[in-house]
Image (cartoon, rainbow, N blue to C red; front, side, top):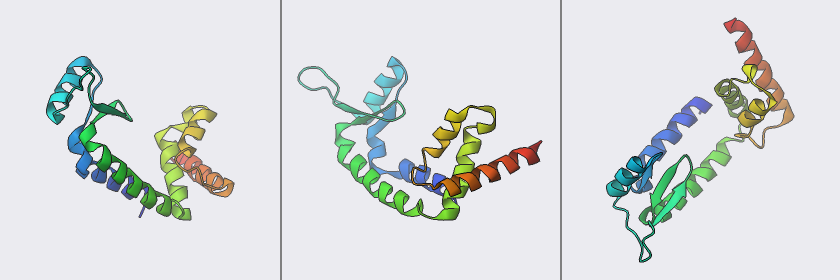
Length: 140
């Protein structure tokens, strides 16, 4: 499995996950109200929404918490297993270097790209960086 295939499979799995019907993302009051209505969120006796915060500005109705935890626990096991493959790591680092546009950025951009691969060796990072720079030079 390539890193691009992995990213696509992850997105498809997230979209199809059971907890997804209890989740919404909101960045203003209107979106929050619409999201609460869509998932059937309730307030507790003190008038507080019974929601958990999730990454990326998301909210999860308490009814979805168990399926959320199970999904990510299983996904993490899969991800850790696949991230041991050398070709996957090098190609993934190149993908993330491109995603962070490291050639135009600062050292922190490179570190952010590498954060997705905490177990990458210095050799793997070096090979990926060399491959990334070659692509940049070929593009002109």
